Image 1 (cartoon, rainbow, N blue to C red):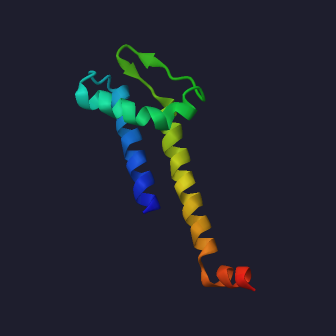
Image 2 (image 1 turned 180 degrees about the horizontal axis):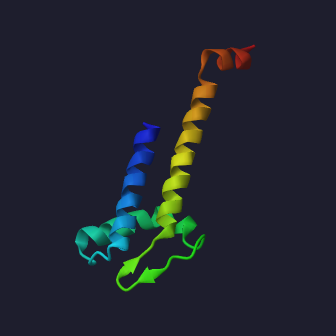
Length: 94
């Protein structure tokens, strides 16, 4: 379930990156995608310079978000597996 949620976030951020890179027109679905993903890229907006080339925009915040959200999903699943394995649970109980 965790991988599914973070996978959806990564796909949406990937679409955002591609749309901005290709200079997609601001139509309904694209604007909707930008609004949804704006929340997820906001922490990474000023990490790297994001150059623009005419209508195209290299959104480095989306790429950083994809990487860090994937690492976060990995970390969460690892912590869950550590705490819910039989050996770790017996250490906590005893």
